[in-house]
Length: 141
Image (cartoon, rainbow, N blue to C red; front, side, top):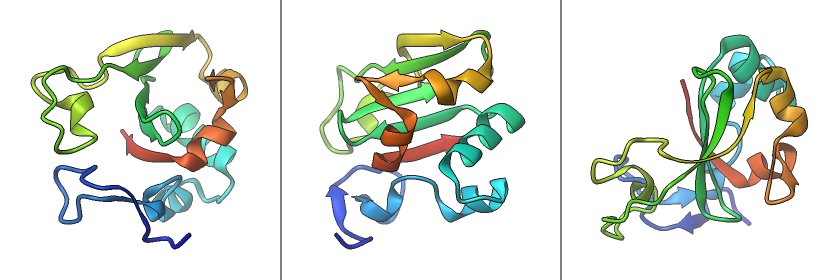
């Protein structure tokens, strides 16, 4: 599989190349640089525990968008609802369009201690170490 292989056509709405590509999955080089590591757990802990960023990712296995919202206590992990008025044009838009609140959805679990998220979070029986390499990590803020 080549790094520029198209995984989902018309995924992005606001970029020149609207396709989600294999090279868009997992941690980008800038995240590795920020965390001063290429270890996935170290990068995750840096952003979530040390910096306190929120995180959103689109998991290719189930085609759902998830958010870890560290700005709230306890920290919720949310599966976002699909936009019922989605026009079908851009995949990511079905979660954030037509006035939908970015991140509105079902709370899967909550963590009182962010240091436990990496160790304990599973979605559909899979650990983050299995999920993130097959996810487009969309936002760290």
